Image 1 (cartoon, helix red, strand yellow):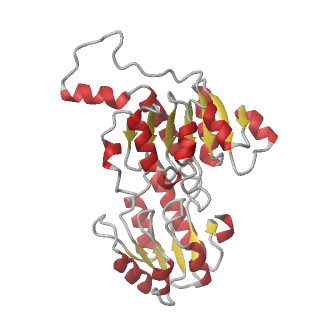
Image 2 (tube, helix red, strand yellow):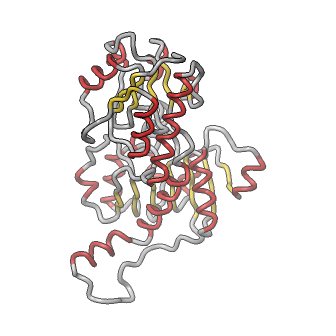
Image 3 (cartoon, one colour):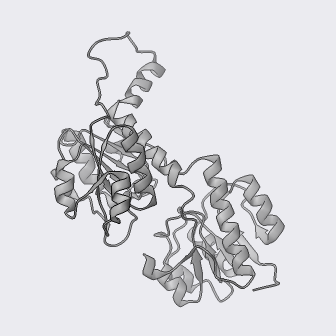
Amino acid sequence: MAGQRLSVVVTRRLPEAVETRMSELFDVELREDDRPMSRDELVDAMRRADVLVPCIADKIEGGMLGQAGERLKLIANYGAGVDHIDVSTARQRGVLVSNTPGVMTDDTADMVMALMLGVLRRVPEGMNVMQAGNWDGWAPTAFMGGRVAGKRLGILGMGRIGQAVAKRAAAFGMQVHYHNRRRLHEETEAELEATYWESLDQMIARMDVISVNCPHTPSTFHLMNARRLKLMKPEAVIVNTSRGEVIDENALTRMLRAGEIAGAGLDVFEKGREVNPRLRELPNAVLLPHMGSATREGRIEMGEKVLINIKTFADGHRPPDLVVPAML
């Protein structure tokens, strides 16, 4: 593709600085509004583009790729997760897939701590009382939550974000434990002062807080199923900023309602925007609309990675953040 001005279709509004630079480099089709594309619109976009720039809300299945035609050569995803894209089928059809890893690590780790504090210290409940004008004044037993310092944190998935969470948790005086597909190097483990558990079940049963930081893959779907959720201590809480599919949301909702788990802080949900209405009603569930990476700095950095991936591809080279099926 070297020397050609690529045709690029963007599925959602991006930060203005990213859209401007993209317009300077490529023949780009930007969105006029921020409405998600329908399935048919996505297929049509793939038919007329050399490069598609989707995000997590755009599910790109194998059948859609089969209708895309021969023009599409790169899907430059705006985001790190690619479980919404059939990467294997894309590669079989000669379509490369890139993503934007690393840039949202600190932002997401910050949100883990925010959710943890929100649940343990009952922050939303206090805000609701103040906003409703129902505060009767300070009382010795009002809004009592749990102290963060001294709690045992079990991190499920010790990649970039999991390790960033571990460092923050240690600064809060928490004891860090983790379960991972592969054990960390001894030096990294010592630096993080983290205890490794080969058995996920054994770790879960002993933790005060569980933080889900693993990707969604076939092997992690409902990794926190009803059986594992029941292993948690009744006073424990769970936080998820990764992917909603890792937790059985219905089972979690039932246990939160029954008081079998003390609380949950969720930034992602099993069925995307279709959040269980019973979950929304619970005072011990802090729910956010997938805000983990939502900082101005992070979103611009994500866009810069997309630009680098497309420009490198346009110059005839392998995109630096190429995703291959073996990575998943």
